[in-house]
Amino acid sequence: MIICPAPANLSAAPLAEIQALEKKVGVILIAYKQVPKIARLTGEEMETVRKVEQETGKILLAYET
Image (tube, rainbow, N blue to C red; front, side):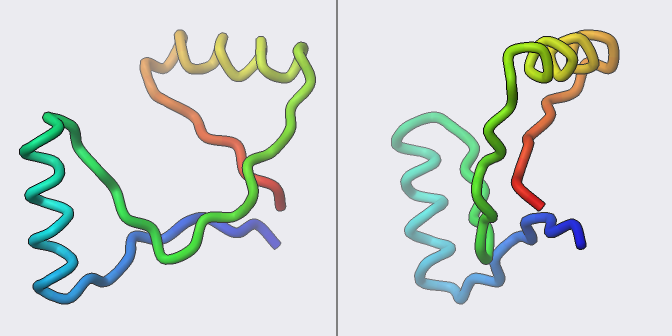
């Protein structure tokens, strides 16, 4: 089973706090319900991921399954 992170459902107060932090720091923040462990990739696997990122222009995140 593959577990993908899902965005968190935030009530008004936490959402406002995160939006204020985004404005203060000048970044976009994404809140997830629960994030699985980051996968530990070999050097060769990382090179493959980087190649696909460059080819597609997308950012890939690797989580353990």
